[in-house]
Length: 224
Image 1 (cartoon, rainbow, N blue to C red):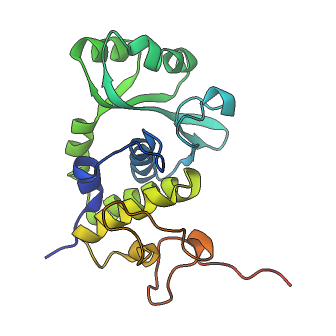
Image 2 (spheres, rainbow, N blue to C red; image 1 turned 30 degrees about the horizontal axis):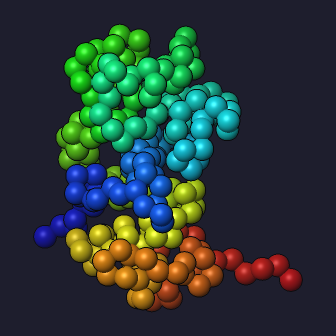
């Protein structure tokens, strides 16, 4: 039996919650980041913490992909249903910022009504819903899905810097693939219900020694 293709499991089944330890929208934005790095491996991908505000960071979308100096891809992430009633408030600034640019502009949304989708596509914005994403990634092999999972973990650990979010996701992963390399970062004293635990000693760059080939970089010795 082949290995579990975890990315589609995470997209379709993983609970996305907002709590004191995790900002609302953080997981969906991390999913978008993972999707982009797997689907567009030739681009340099930039993202920030959820709710940071793209304009304040001199970016266009929540996730931007560059080839050198050229903006090739820009993705705005919304973990909600987009309708004509909230379209302008949720995506108006993104649409205006990308107008006239030769960039693949994508609205990465949980769901969207037909009329709102037609409005966006009429302005040159590609729409990708959760259901469409699931159908697309179902055709990915294990390695491509794994690249997306590693990107997702990177976003949560190193960009969002949410220890709770990483541990909660690792707990979910362990239920489906208890041999997954990144479980080297799962702390044994995490609460079973919430995944809450302290950040691993030494930070995310210090995996347990018995797990070679960990997807995150090994801790480097300090220069003398």
